[in-house]
Structure formats: structure tokens, C-alpha cells
Image (cartoon, rainbow, N blue to C red; front, side, top):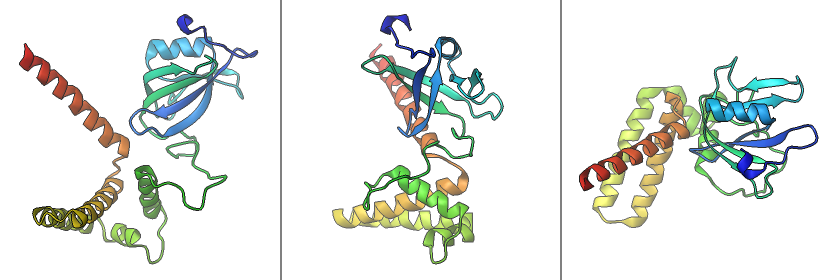
Length: 213
């Protein structure tokens, strides 16, 4: 901590931007003082200073939605922190994944992201929309969703075997969409899958090292 000569403000606080290490999603903006930062470093879980209550605040101490710290980076001026975490649940007290769920301004054509697609599909499960194919799938239940995943996987195989690149891309997109519907139905997040893939990369490195020795 001393190595970077962190700059705390006149109240002894430094802003901490908390980000999901697996998905890159910004979860919240909180504040730390020297004590909460030392607790975070010692325990490996986020601890903040509550400006409204004037007390230390360990994230998840009552809700269980703890944030395991993977990495902490100071900015170029050493007056703000980026805290990369593995969240165990929603970051926001309202129950949303991120505290930045409301939209103040949005371009007419915002860039596509898989995270946005996941949130859209999750929204269709939480709030049914008339005429929505996604809502229809959720209403039909797990068996219907699994059937569609199987059908789309078959379509990918047929298109790939035909060496039709354009059709293969189209069918892969269909499969990814239906897999995402399945993820939401099963309560699986993007972070869950990303972390599983990351763990396999670590295992693969260990296997390669063993072969070298």
C-alpha cells in the first residue's frame, strides 16, 4: 500500500471502483480509508468505509453477497482504486448485479455486448412481454428450452459440415442465444461460465508444466 503513495482526500478516503474480474462489468463505486483498505488486503474481501453511517462496512456481512478480491490497481495519480473482484451475488442493495443499472442517457444505437443480451433475456424472464419469443420459451419451461438448444446444436453441425461459413455463423448465433436462455433459466451467470473457463486455463498450464518436467 505504501509503495504507491496512495492519495487519500481530506476526509481520509479514496474512491474504489469495483469491477467483476471475469466479465469486466462495473459493479459499484465505494470508498475506502486506510483501515478498510488494510482489512481488504488482509482478508481478501472488500471492506469499505460507509460515508452515510460513518463505520467500516464489509461487503456481504449481512447479505452474504461478498466480493472476493482478485486484484487492486491504483490509477495513474494514485488517488483512485480499481478493485477487481469475484462477486458472490448482486452488488447493489436493490438486488441488481450492478449499482449502475439505471440509464440516464443512451445512444440510439448502443454497441452490442453479450452482457447486454444476457440482461435483456433475464429481463424477459422477470417481466413477461407480449409477443416476445424469449418470454414464450420461459413460459414453456426447461424441457422446451433444452429441446431448442439441441435443435440449434444440430443446425450448427449441419451448416459446418456443409462448409457454409455464412450459415454456420447464423446457426452459432442461434445456438448462443438459446444457450443464454438456458443459463438464465438455470440461474447461471456469465461470470460463472467465464470463471469455469479460466480455471481450465490454469489446469492446462499445470498439465503443460508437468509434461515439461
